Image 1: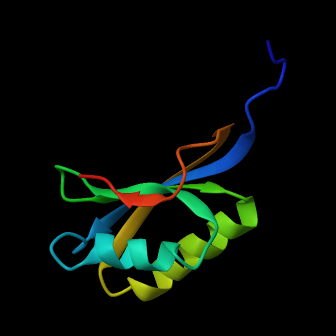
Image 2: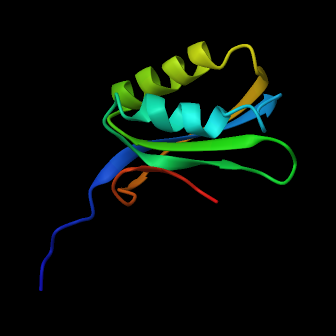
Length: 97
């Protein structure tokens, strides 16, 4: 039996509002994620927003989300954010259906 504690990593969830569905937003976020060491996912929500969940090194997550915001600025009207420390999520970054 192991006494190892689960690894705690930085998480940030961002809800994007605006014209963010039907414009390739999720695919663009997936492409951006490939340049960063982050895990998590992106999904369309029934209320018209898009949720991005990212986990990893705090600076890496911040840089990833800053690049998403830069590339998608024309589509984003507002954001809501939540930060927390928690266990590592599954590996990779995915589009969540």
